[in-house]
Amino acid sequence: MRSNDVLGFIFAGTLDEKIPELAASRTTASIPIGGKYRVIDFVLSNMSNSGINNVGIVAKSNFLSLTDHVGSGSAYDLSKRRSNLTLLTPYGGKSFSSYVETIYNMHGYLENCREEYVMISPGNVITNFDYTDLFDFHSKKNADVTLVYKTGVVPGGYERPLTVDVDADGKVSQIFVKPSATEEVVNQVFGSVLVRKSLLMEKIRQALSLNQLDIKRVLQESVGKYNVYAFENKGYTAAISSINDYFDFNMDLMKKEIRDELFNPKHPIYTKVRDDAPSKYGLSSRVKNSIIAQGCVIDGEVENCVISKGVYVGEGAKLSNCIVMQDTKIGKDTNLNYVIIDKDVTIKDERSLMGFESYPIYIAKKSVV
Image 1 (cartoon, rainbow, N blue to C red):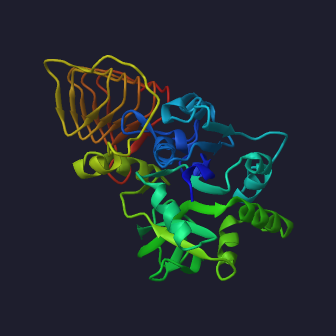
Image 2 (cartoon, rainbow, N blue to C red):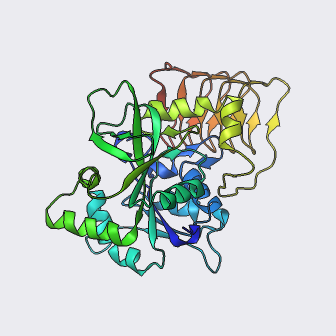
């Protein structure tokens, strides 16, 4: 299987409803992470690095931020003569309420694309993954459908997780939807599926005619009828399904081994470039175990924090275990601990806010505290 014979198909709004704070004005895929990236940078970079050069992004609402970030796809090398990035939004009253309806209503786009296979991916998963290994596996097994799974405990935001039983050859013997033992280690499929386009559209049309709108049930019913295989992603994987998942992932970035794996120079993660001057650190500043993007002015103390571009931290301020998004202003002598601060927030002098590791405080975009 050639990589350029695979169409990338990303659902940008995966689990938007589980993160109402962060997804109030954007899709899950366009949530800022790690100081200068967005969640969607990982899946787009993975596809581009693997040779997929035609990608469609489904966004049912709040897609202005996503459109601004991905643009024409040039940052991901997807705007050349033989490559393309398309943002697929609702039109003509078409329903995007389920995966089945969405895929059907995009049948014109899908069937007009020249690629023979479709790589469906969620927009909330962060990993550095080489799809070419998956393509080789799919071809060697003569699979009809290949699911990508991760072994671990199901994240808390997944009410109906999809898990699989896999034999030694990688063949799926059973698919479970909402298994009872979600606190145990399971083989969870976050939503990445490789399938032949003609088979996908056949199953979607059949499901729609039977009023079966649950894509997970469609996959369940395929076991035994088709060659359904599963491929394990053994690398670091984070799925953003709650505000706690978001906080935990950003804190994970403090660990060098995780940064080294996610930001592997052999498989780089691309993003929209914003040119800023280097960050400035005042004489009274103190920074420990933190990620500081460019364009910041740090005059206070910062520890275990992720600070995005253009942030100002005033003199005497103390920030611990915080995530601060771009262009936020934090006044003098403030004290913040376990706080997630969205873009363009102003926190005035001498304010104190404290959450907890299991319950970080969130401050909405453009708020004044």
